[in-house]
Image (cartoon, rainbow, N blue to C red; front, side, top):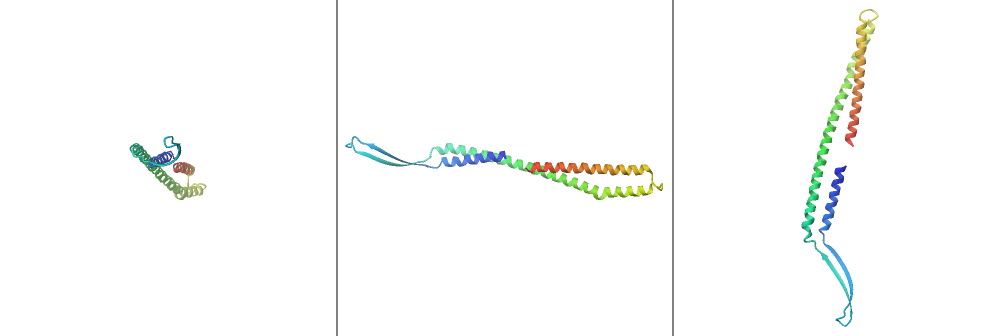
Length: 167
């Protein structure tokens, strides 16, 4: 936004410079009393055009300076746009990777652990599985849920960073 405002200011200065090099027109009128011509009144009407012949070199250097400032500002703006685009693409890739991990937890890992836990619960009363196996599976399930929550939090942070970068 600041770069845009600076560029606009220099563009307006360029417009003003172009007006300085245009000719000025003038119109004037007057009344005189002539004493040497028998005391007759004399009315005059004058039309003039000022040509800015010598001022072009002064204004030309100012115009060149404004054009140079505009070019520098445009380069800064383009560099900033490229930097923001780079950060946005990194954020989008990271969001995609987090989404893939969450999807793997929800569709593959969690169902597999739930199935293992169901089998262990069914076998435990009959003595075919040990209590420690049941607890380890429950613990892995809780760790998996914690990892999923952590990934969802990270995804929300990344979305917020993406919103900030997009402003």
